[in-house]
Image (cartoon, rainbow, N blue to C red; front, side, top):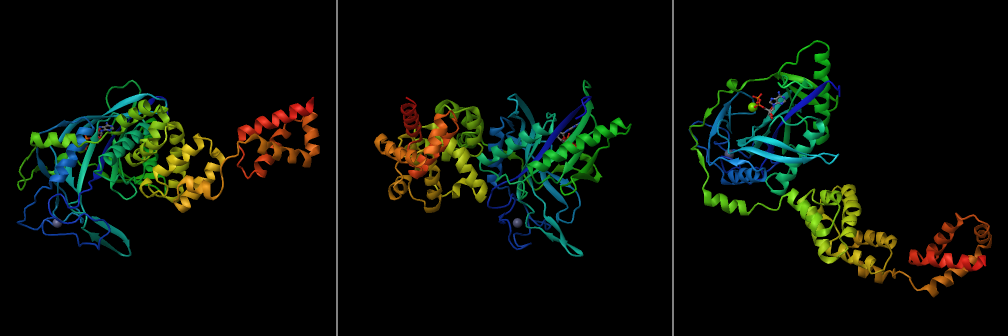
Length: 481
Ligand code: ADP
Ligand code: ZN
Ligand code: MG
C-alpha cells in the first residue's frame, strides 16, 4: 500500500440464525426445500396479517450481545425499511433502526505480530431476510421466496479497522463467536454469514475520514481480503490521479478479481424507516435475561487462556485447538485420557486436522474417537511403540476404528527395546555389509544413517530408534579399537 495513505474499514455482517422457524411466522427455515414452499401469508406480506416475533431470535441476539460485551437495550423497536425489489414481496423489510437490541460492543483481535486491538461494534440488530432472485435459468429470472422472513442478526462495526488483515481477523472472530454460541453455522460459501465492507482511505495524519465505498457479494474470507485490498488500491490511485471517491455500492466479481459499481449509495431517508405498527416494542425481562446469560458457553478467548494455563500449551497450539468449540472439546477428551498434553496437541493439530482437510469432514464425524487417540499416545509415552509405528497404527485406526492396543497386539507391533535382540540384528547387518562398515571406519560418517535404516528395516520398524543408535555407536567404537 502507498505509504502516504491509511485505509479505514467498517464491516456490516449478516448472520443467518439457526432457528427452526422464521422470525415472524411458523414457516420452516430449512434450506434447499422446493422453491416457494416454505411460505405463508405472513412472510409473503399479504394484507391484514400480523407478524409474531420468534422468541428464539431475541435469545440469539442477546447471546451475541453478551459475547461482544454490548450494552443490551431493555426496550428495542422494529422498523420497516421500505424499498422495492422483486424478491421482497412486502415492499419492505422488517428491521431495527433507531433502537436496536444491542449497542456499543467490542471484540478483540490479535494480529500476526502478536499485537492486540479492540474493534468496536456499533450495533447488533434483528431483521428478516429477503427472498432470492435466480438469474441462471435461461432468459427469465425466477424468484424463490423461501428465504423471506428467515431471521438475521446484523452486526455493524465501527470504522476501526485499518487493513484487510484486521478486517479478516475481525470477521473470523465474529464467525467464531456465532459458532461457539451455536446461533449461526458461519458458512460464508453458503451465504449464512455475509459481509459487506465499507472502505475509505485518507492521507496519514488526516483526522477526517474519506468518502467510503461499500463492497458486497464476497462469499469467502479470501474474497473479503482480496476485495478490500482491491478497493484500497483503487481509491488511492484515483486520488493520486486527481480524482474523487464517490459514495457508491460495488459488487465483487471473484472471477475477474475486481469490483463493479452496482448503484450509487442510497441514504437512510430513501428507505423511509418508521416503527412497524404491527409489532410492539421488544421488552427484555431481566430474570429471563439472567437465565440466558448463565447459558453463555465458555467463549474462545477464555478457552484459549485456559488451554494455555491448564495444559501448558504454547499460545499457537491453544489458538489452533480453540478455533472451533468441537475441536476444543475433542482435544479436551484426548487430554482426559493421556497426560502428555503437548503430544495430544501435536496429534490433533497435525494428524487429525490433516485428515479432516483431506476428507473434507468435521471433527464430529472423525473416525478415531478421542479416547482411542489418547490410548495411542499413551502407548508411545510408555515406549510400547515408536512414534513412527504410531503413524501406521493411526492410519489403521482410521480404517478399522479399533483401539491402538488391539491393533498393536494383532499386528505384533510392540517396540523392541531388548538390547540383545537388536544386537543380534546389528551383527547380521554388519556381516552382510562389510564395505559400508569399512567406509565408516575410514571416516565416512554419513554411512551411519545407512546402518540405522537397515536395522529399522530388518526389525520392520519395531526397534526402538534410540536404542538402535546407541548400540550402533557402541559397536563401531568397539571396532575402532
Ligand atoms: P450508511 O449510512 O452509509 O449505512 P453508516 O454510518 O451506517 O453508513 O456505516 C455503515 C458502515 O460503514 C459501518 O460499519 C461503519 O463503521 C462504516 N463506515 C462509516 N463511515 C466510514 C468511512 N468513512 N470509511 C469506512 N467505513 C466507514
Ligand atoms: Zn411464513
Ligand atoms: Mg447504515
